[in-house]
Image 1 (tube, rainbow, N blue to C red):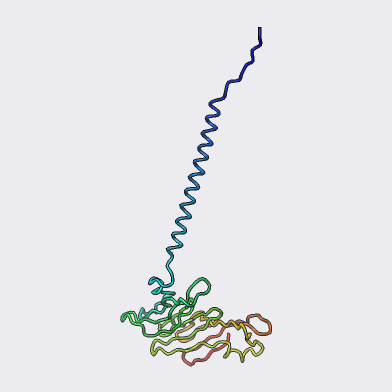
Image 2: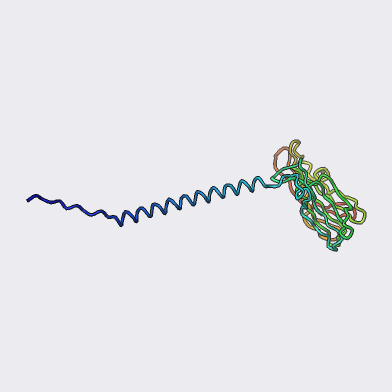
Length: 218
């Protein structure tokens, strides 16, 4: 009699399960690719819809609005200077002081510089205005009684106290920054500039008296 050879039956159930798993993985990959493509489209659409500097929402933007303690005034950076861009932001078109009850600008300065900062005196008569360019910050005190300005001392007036600290000719990088009001008429101010010979900054503080326009080093 001839010999018969046993043939193992096909594992049909296992193959079907394997095929289903592959199908599920393939469908999941397709879904992920579709989702990724949709996210890219949304991101591109959002980028294309970003407002440009000419849109009214930016033209009328308000920066660092500060209200006087008595609620009579507000001061802020306003608008947008399309020709001045640094550090990821545009400069303001102007800094203005508004008398709120009249909705009227009673003082302003142009240009508005970058990121202006304001500090009101406790009685609301004076407000310090720090305004920055690309490599400097200067400051003034505004008197709301007559809208006169006092420019806070910088390196020119401070240099006699630091005769060895001649400002660098190319990049003096002066910074004059009001820190806090100590009373209705005195304010603490920090200063800094780059020294010519060393390239290192010199820093310090002084107290400025708005009544007599004098300062005292700390």
